Amino acid sequence: DKEGGGENVDSKFGLDTTGLWKPAETIIGGNELGRKVMEEARHSAIQFAQSHGRKPSLAVITVGTLKRYTHASRRVQLYSNHSQSWFTKTDTGRANGFDVTEIQLDAETTTTDKLLSEIYKIRDKVDGIQIMWPFPPHIDSA
Image 1 (spheres, rainbow, N blue to C red):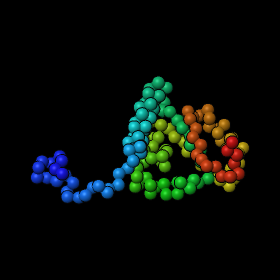
Image 2 (tube, rainbow, N blue to C red):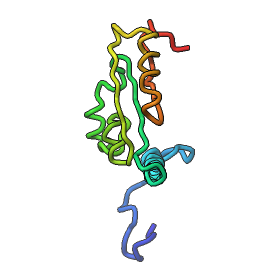
Image 3 (spheres, rainbow, N blue to C red):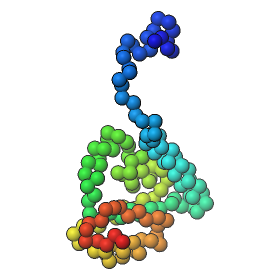
Image 4 (cartoon, rainbow, N blue to C red):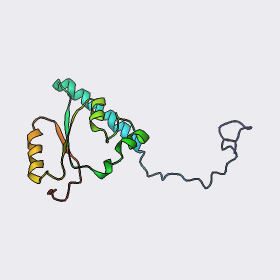
């Protein structure tokens, strides 16, 4: 096979590629999709700021430590960067035109009522609230 390089160049470097793994065509390209979503969010934040005279704001509430965050800093180093990773919401927000406030509640002492109180306390101060799941078992998630 001499594709793409003239008649004296083997484009596959003499390798048999018939058994190579290829991702399924139905798999979504997560990095490209994520980049597009962040670009749209950044443009939306700019329009919001121009219309309202301030950045859009988000509060992120977490109760306890989420197991999926155990190696978050290493995952950011390997797979992403601080301006585009959901592991670093404050940095990502800042880089994309949002004010993000992270609220970390203690898993042992936070009750359902205390969580609701935090939500009610912040709800009129921000444009959106993201509550991280899962909750500890003693908190009503209904």
